[in-house]
Image (cartoon, rainbow, N blue to C red; front, side):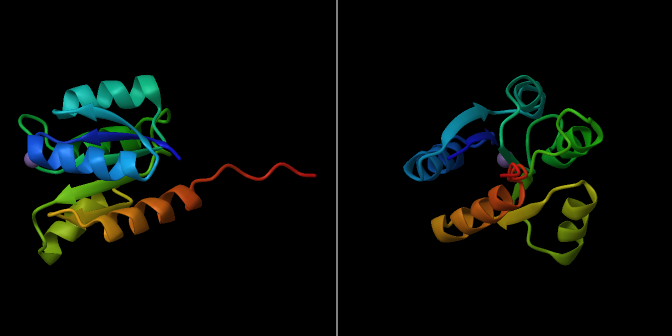
Length: 129
Ligand code: MN
């Protein structure tokens, strides 16, 4: 179970993401714009971030680039949420530093699979016994 930051400006998408994550036992922090998301990421150091790409003002790719250039937040996995599915968009998402992306609408099996993979990859080293 993890603390997960969701940055999403669409209320229906936010409700769905919150529901799916809390149903899986995660705790959720919400932001509806990139600036608030950046502040919460720095303050709370969530274990994972779901980042909508299309946001009012700063977009999700710019916000992810900032997070990935900051040593305090660079290690937090970022999953881009996108309505775009074209090849060049996947490349932009990768270049911004996102660890994965999901094409909306959210489907719970895919969301859980991607989240679980990223959380497992990000586990701290086991202590030596
Ligand atoms: Mn949006």
